[in-house]
Length: 363
Image (cartoon, rainbow, N blue to C red; front, side, top):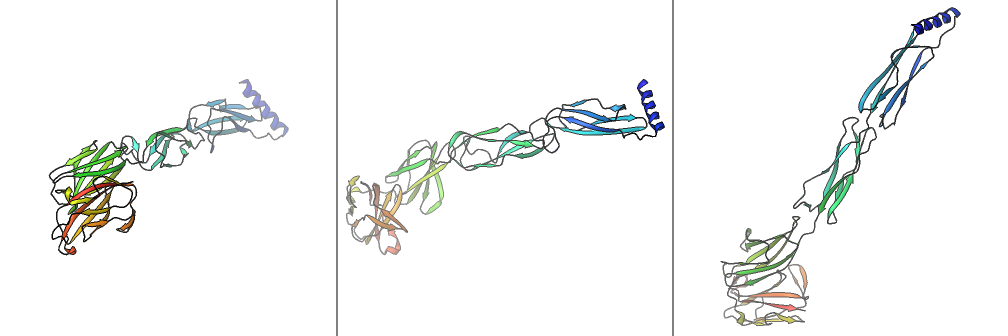
């Protein structure tokens, strides 16, 4: 009551003297850690500057603390001095909490917890108060192989808070197993196929007939290194495919062609079986009655690299030659050759059963 009387007396004195009183002004004084775009990222204290005195506070105007995240808290102050009344307010936007971030790979792992081809990693985030401004850019990983590989990312909200780095840990293996030394031991109606598959966890052996190459049948699946396929047709050409898969889902294949038959070793004369040679050999065999030509096929690592049709019972291999558009060298390796007799015109493709097969080694 006394303060109101004093204010009234001051106002009356000013009016009586004819002086013009300065307008009452209220100005907010905000203290706190400023962030981005008008946001605060730490506790805020709002005080008020009211001039000129004396004045009478009618609403708020005490120091106000804003300590809880808010998209907008309005703080007000109203005061009067005689007939003059002033009002002011300020809206505080406070976000002290960094955004929540998670790693978001573009796809699931391929097999066994491994990725076996390029992986794109994104970063996903949310912020309930100020919203997300930006995150680390997408990252594409394509190697090298390894386990416990770590990629990290962060996100920033609109207030300027940055999340702690979030790791994404994964394993990567894009290297397929190594299939090698695919060989076959051929009987009259059997073929024992052997292989090496370094790094594979499972191996499948697939058989297809030359007459119907798309009609494939898996004759073996497991972890072994050989399989004997029985009940084959004598003289028919078959293709065997070795399909190896590792723990990361990588696939490698190897293949070879076989023709079961009564292999007559005595028909093949030279070189002797498993001979070790230093120069190209002369392949020789016994003459077959009524045969007008022969078909000689040479394989290396299960792949056919030569097919020739000599009319005499011998054929001289050379150091280099071309077959189906590719140049080959008789380099150090193990070779297997097969022999058939041809009857009538060569265009008729009339062949007898397999006459024999042998291996030799070039050093």
